[in-house]
Amino acid sequence: HHRIVIVGGGLAAARAAESVRSEGVDASVTVLAAEARPPYERPPLSKGYLLGTDDAASTIPLDAAWYAAHDITLRAGAEATELDTAAHTVRAGGETLAYDQLLLATGASPRRFTGPGGSLTGVYTLRTLHDSTVLRAAIARGGRHVVVIGSGWIGLEVAAAAITYGNTVTVIGHGSIPLEAAVGPVIGEVFAELHRANGVELRMDSGVSAIRGAGHGSGHVDGVVLRTGEVLDADLVVVGIGATPNTTLAAASGITVDNGIVTDAGLRTSAPDVFAAGDVANAYHPVLGRRLRVEHWANADKQGAAAGRALAGVDVEYAEIPYFFTDQFDLGMEYSGYGTLAAGGDLVVRGDLASREFVAFWLRDRHVVAGMNVNVWDVNESVQKLIRAGVRLDPAALADPGVALDSL
Ligand code: FAD
Image 1 (cartoon, protein in one colour):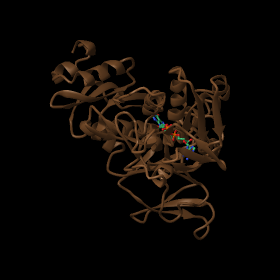
Image 2 (cartoon, helix red, strand yellow):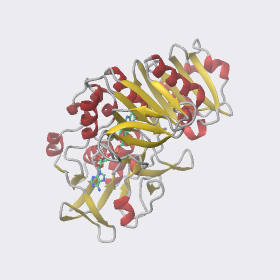
Image 3 (tube, helix red, strand yellow):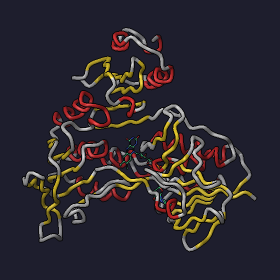
């Protein structure tokens, strides 16, 4: 009898379990998830759930009853602690499970502030439902000084939630414009302006040297010390400085790890019968011609599903265009494309940056390599089509809202 084991408790694990079963393979399926709940989705944790408009149940794509109904053993609260790829066994909760095929979908963990004061009470990171519940309790009453370290997507989303609750919010970022590395200075400035217009104070180029406690190196946070020596009052600090892939289990078993678990385009790791997907996977991307690790929801969704097919014995080639979305205040955005190709490319804007209603395209040699729609909907598919087509375009036509994207 065939045994499939999925290690992980995020969306990639859930989608893998779902697609294994829809392939109809005759196998036992076990999901080992370290957190004590069914695999769940994280985007609401810095948006609707943090804001109190979405409940916890809405983060769960497939509930416990679904796993039971599909004859999948869900072991929530069971962390896989040891993987023996030669023996084809994995240990969890004091037991050893044998597998024929195994998926590593262990995700990522937030980077912590490693300077002085990083572990004071009142310093938060945000990754799990529990993190979001605790942070929400801390910001929901309003009237507090919230300092966010990091001006990336999560930092900005938390800033939006915190100010919506009536706190004063300062975001400390690197570089001169938030998100500049991800979307360039022009679009980064759109987000900066959105936050300023909503009362968030942006302190770029400041750098944090320490988080200060009320006592002497202990107790509750009361300030953030900038590299300039200036001290900002802080009742609580949220650290949003990126995430690192959870590779400990894989690395200890001898699987090749390099900025995540290395896989080929078929999501196969260096160990036989072991696959990886989601935030933890650094998978060879056949279109880019190199490996790519994507820390986005849609990647966990689609790559997880592809890994499920691979577990079921199907030969897969994962070649999706990276896709990402965010919601901050009244701005909703979708981005599709190859950020690394877009960096330094030519920016073409269709619509109006100032009113935050536009589609932006990044061109390389007049080919679209990425596109972002802001408060404009139902165009993402057309954007992806343009990227896939890879043809040379007239930038003026691209910028002209009168020219249908699908006609280009
Ligand atoms: P994860 O969601 O990290 O899940 C991995 C799970 O595996 C965890 O539950 C972990 O406990 C478990 N695990 C780890 N090691 C083991 C082990 N040894 N044994 C058993 N279980 C283990 N993306 C977007 O595109 N748009 C957004 O707006 C967006 N917002 C986000 C907001 C927040 C607050 C966060 C944290 C992320 C956001 N993302 C967003 C990113 C998106 O959530 C991730 O890309 C996605 O969660 C990755 O899914 P995953 O299944 O690969 O990993």
